[in-house]
Image (cartoon, rainbow, N blue to C red; front, side, top):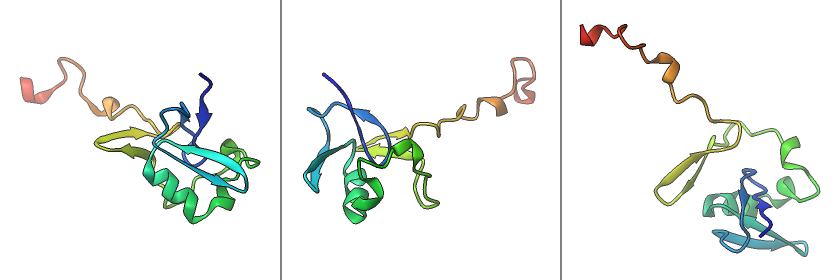
Amino acid sequence: MQSVIDPVCGMAIDPQTAVARTTYEGQEYFFCSIECKREFDQNPETYRRDTAVADRAPRADEPPFTKTGPIVAPKFGSAGSGGAEYEPLPGDNPDTR
């Protein structure tokens, strides 16, 4: 099965299991979450298929994650190390001395 791209967050999803879908100007769009569909419905011109997702700069108020039910996942390119660089190395932790 070929995946499609959620036009809002850029996530690759299976159209058969997409959480939401909509049709705009004769084209069908699929979404990974209800939040992404709501965002699309508020301003569909921003996310038209002829505008590449990679070319769209993220807005300042756009969260760097996608939430589907209780699962929260970072959007592409926003995942960091999770703070591992701030953890002390073994033997360097003053709390264990």
